[in-house]
Amino acid sequence: MSSKPILRQNKECSGCHRFLQKSEFNKDNKRKDRLSIYCKSCQSKIQKKYAEQWAKERSRGLEIPKEKECARCHRILPSTQFVKSKANKFGLTPACKECQSKRYKEYMKRPGVKKRIRRRQKELYTLPEVKLKRKKYRRKHNRIPEVRRRNRERSREYARTPEGKRKQREYRERRLAIPEIRERERQRKKEYAHRPEVKKRFKQYLKDYLSRPEVIERRKQYLKEYMQRPETKERIRKYNEKYFSNPDNLAKRRKYVRDYLQRPGVKKRIRRYRKQYYKRPDVKEKYHDYYMEHKTRPEVKERNRVHQRVAVKRKRRKR
Ligand SMILES: [Zn+2]
Ligand SMILES: [Zn+2]
Image (cartoon, rainbow, N blue to C red; front, side, top):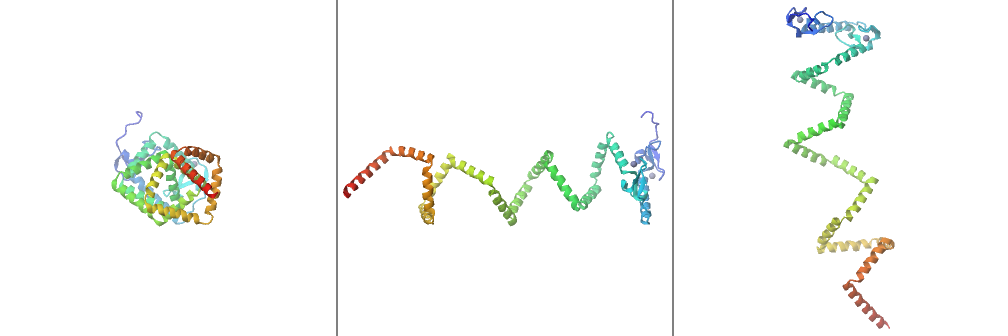
């Protein structure tokens, strides 16, 4: 740095001949002072002029060559290997795509470049006119189905990453912390669930879900386990006690059982089931134990004695 000659703060533009600060000139490493001879505004004007000129030429039917020499690597390449640029003759950049991307990558690798670009972009994006322009561009661009699909995919992918999940959760929490939004969301959910097509879809889904073999098995197992729980048994017992303390309910139930037993095949089915049931070793054991205990109860003993006496009397009478 110290070997650099001390230059005057201002420089004359070769276009507009104004003396301007050096920050008003683009870099040009080919020049001695490493600055362009034109100020930024003149350069952009010149570029525009060129663009117009070449556009005019092209509209007049200037033939675009099939091949072109790269200004950097000097290979002769098909014109598809050059980026389109309105400011150049034939509408192509001087250097080939490969050279340009190499140069760009090298440039991006230089220390501080990325940071600087990001900072500049951030500043730029806060400008109202830039914001509007970007919004317009996005809206237009998003109308392309391919773009929309890609964007959707990208955001879905992002939403699956831990960072994306966290961001989404934070966003939701932030929104739901506002009472009116929370109320609106609740209302919307309710309305959504009440829509006929949603109801229908949910019903269908539930039906499909409940008919899945593994779900049926799981529910069966759960129910079995649930019914074995002492607190469940107690609750059912209490409920029945209360329900059948109402004579109407009791009568209703009795009538139902009577009617049920009159249905064709029911009695037969019950008989068959009972036969099988009492053959089961565990049931046999249970009933044996129960019977042994039952027999010893005083009131049962008394009842049995009365029965026996009656039976004996009957026998005697028959003789
Ligand atoms: Zn100028
Ligand atoms: Zn090249």
